[in-house]
Image (cartoon, rainbow, N blue to C red; front, side, top):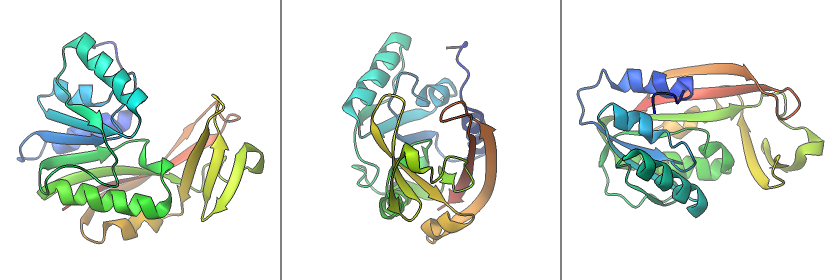
Length: 205
């Protein structure tokens, strides 16, 4: 796996939690896909667990784990209703996943992640910004209100995309301490050479 380059935000989160004295046990909410990010944390000695709402995505991630001899403990699940005991994980994250839930469901998901975190545990989550250049483009799909849109992606699938103003997601973390927050911009070719803007949050229980 040395030839795999993971998104920079995952390396940043890994670097951050490496400074912690908590037990190295981590949960990925949205863990499926052909290159499951949990593989990075497995390499650094973490006990890994992951859920995804898509069986196809889980099957793909399991195939990757089997091919590389990794124990990632992947299963079908919904981040809005996590099937784990409270205070199970030292670290929980969701990367490029929670943005496809409605805002009210994103709040439920963050609450669930905080429930399964141990005291002093750290949560990382990212949210799409309304400053993204494709936010609100009418010809990409349907506006359902509150900066929530059903866009048809390059594979022809209808995918919910949800965008936040600055500080809007702060209210999700009322039961935790926001310890780090930033906004990042990157260029995308799809859709239409767009500017992609994200809000990144680290919170401590």
